[in-house]
Length: 108
Image 1 (cartoon, rainbow, N blue to C red):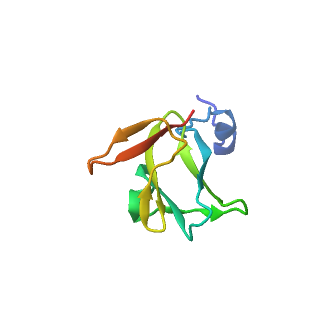
Image 2: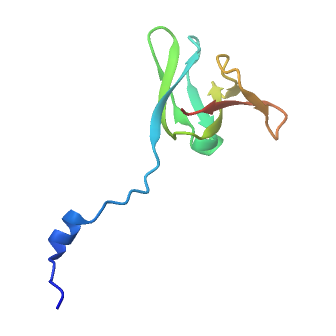
Image 3: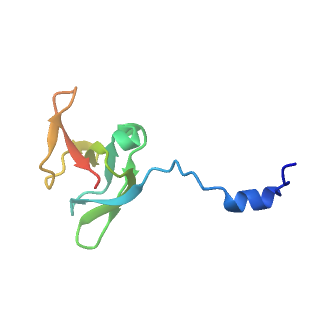
């Protein structure tokens, strides 16, 4: 006859299975000292549907953090006072379906 194991004991000995994907907080920065609003828009914000509002620092740089999956590549741009802008610090770009360029970031 098999020995009865309590549910609590079975939980302690059973290996944990994790389906979690590693993510990382990535800081985005944009220098626009004269701007009144800067937003981060990208494939991870559904572009202009849910852009992330950036915070202006004393030095005129705008910052925001986004949690992104490690190993994935993301497309993004900034919206500065309603005008779409590329990240001047980003060297990787691709042509968008609208004839402009999107910036690319790969999270390592």
